Length: 327
Image (cartoon, rainbow, N blue to C red; front, side, top):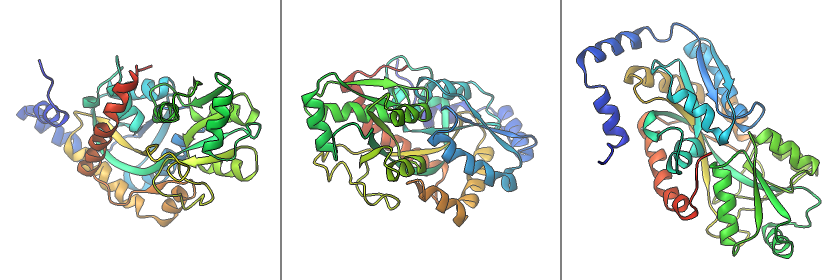
């Protein structure tokens, strides 16, 4: 038996007249109490650097909004929590390609992509290859040469199994001829960064952030390459993987707002419109760009849904080819 598409599922779920009337009533009064934004990663990581500035701007738009960090399993634990919440607009998720595409496409996921509705893409992002200075590599090709000369001695950290970071790491290994590099999953990027700085792990694949930029410029880590097609305006000194001789190592990430799939249209639109107004703030845009992120000033539920679908179509074959399993 074939499952309905996400859009068919959402449409069918809202078919009842009585449910529609109730939904309109809830939407007209929304919001009447504080809204929770679940960031499915440990506190202090890139999720906080993206979600918390949005929260600060929402007070004047939607009233009180607070953050709850629920990390673990590469974002799957916190995401699954929101999937089970009441679809009333009071529990939002800061999701990304890992939580909304990669994990649902992996074997035995804790939730389905159909459990969510896309609301608004906040930013697009790049992943960066960062190494400890003890690794004798000045660029991505140097890292490949070092890994080949030291099979099994190199490891790379990510925020967890099934994240985009993990997927890019496996792509890097395959495209370099099957490098013997061990994956070490963490409960978030913050503890992984701490271990990179202390030399506990030699390599980290993470979303480019202000913290990583600062650590790189201070010489505490070395930033080798980013996964976007063009260099980032905030770190023009860091080349792309394409420039570094890996034309197929490309990955543009994104972070955005999601709600449980049965959330009424009026509530979804209210959140999206409020977010679009907040994203017009130049200070917020500058804050995101300083972290190597590109703010999206003109997203919408439909536009963001198409981004999610395009990411799924692009990454699906790669996920199958490596036999990725969730958690």
